[in-house]
Image (cartoon, rainbow, N blue to C red; front, side, top):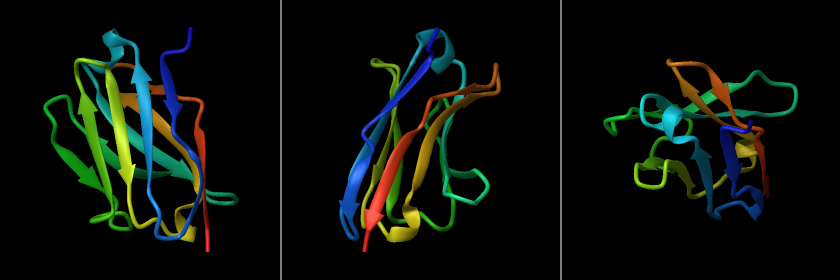
Length: 114
């Protein structure tokens, strides 16, 4: 049973924008912190942005001012708006939910060309 489904990745030129979406099962979405992680080739998975069930947000320093995480409680969906993308943002982006369980999406590829 797939519980987190990401979409919205793709290929974009540097300076461009993408919006990632993660649709979650209601039972998971309502009680958990939702995160976006990313993993570039040859690198460890890193936390990009976090949003609590109450809407509080945190960001990695590398994306502050460029990325915005948000959640739509009516749609059980979390978003990651990515602006002014850089080649170093190229990675597979994963949606994650915790701490009531530890749920991961399948990942969506984001490629930023220079």
